[in-house]
Length: 587
Image (spheres, rainbow, N blue to C red):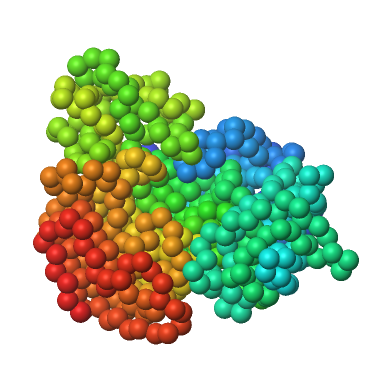
């Protein structure tokens, strides 16, 4: 007996010795600040380091403080299908971490600066990985910042691009911006107050045509662009709708942590995670480079976005500002049923042109079918037996799914979506600052526990918090069953109109045939959505809009009215309810 115990202890000791904590200073592999393009060198260094590591090793990669530059020409190329982005085929990747376990990338304060069109950092099919202590930025952003110099009314607007903006007037007299491997003709933008950096009241998305632009004698630009709202001094972030490349891409990972990471610009979202299990954002920010930063904008779209994830998403201590869309959006993907090939087998399709080609589910996942016209579940719970062409679904728009259970034959006469309930996360969004951004503050579409607490939503130009769900346009699932919105401060939200912006907090699922709905999309239990202990500082009327919910409580909140802006919203109700039940409102 004693010999057996001795052998077990010896084997355990040998196993622990074989699994080592390894630290690699990347400077020893030529990854040094201020040494030119490092895209090719970083890929080679990672390959060498991987060969030195054994399975089970805990690996730390460490940078020195300083500036590191990455260009697309020598970078690793990879084709990713990225949710809620334009699918462009092969892309340049600055740092690609694929198939790592227990890896930590410690920037030690490093500033990673990228050029052209690149995905700065991709972490894919990895477990227990951490990225910390670094920033991501681009030398020449695809958003062009200009300042209004003169507004001549019918004579057009005179503006001046900021010094870092590279531009030209094309042969057909259009204002065009350009950079390393890209050229754009911006036609929309967001206007900012020059002193406060708030988005200009009641402007929303500005649309313009720079056809006919000409340069004045003193180097200013004068197109046939007219807009009486843009007074001299106004700063405009001119852009297109194109969003090919996020700042950080997470895909197929388990237990990922981003700590003290800052994204200052990305030609897409700051962070997009898809098909991941468990993500912690600790002090992760999409932000300007301080109060003296001459830029007014950060990312081309959302600051953070989570698609078809599960586990716990915990985001705390972040600063989200100046982005061209939401601070956070958490949702799944509705597929649309396109056919039936057997008693238990269907074909189903990704419907949105910015969300397809990636893993949607795997064997054992629980799914429900939903009538997209009335947004109500049909039939009973189903479980995936197989999903093809394979579980990676790489590049596929249409999938064949076989379930363990037979399907209800009646559903094939309807407009049917499919939701994967296993790919739904718990969410804790706490102690964050969201300010001066386009569109909305935070979007949540998950049936699991969602807590939004102790955040400040400061001049989000649209709705501050949106609970959504849409199987007809964006195809972002699903219903909210357990949401607590507590202890937040809302400062002059809703200064412009965008989609789903009916109140400071909007519960706004897209339901084409609401009159025919027999149940409710959100909720289902008493107090399923509870809004309590918050402070609303507002210049306008609408505080809460709710549609198709059973179980809503609004209590112990403080509402104060100011005169910062002139009221303008079409909704003149503090509380507007549309097809709701079991609602309690007091304050």
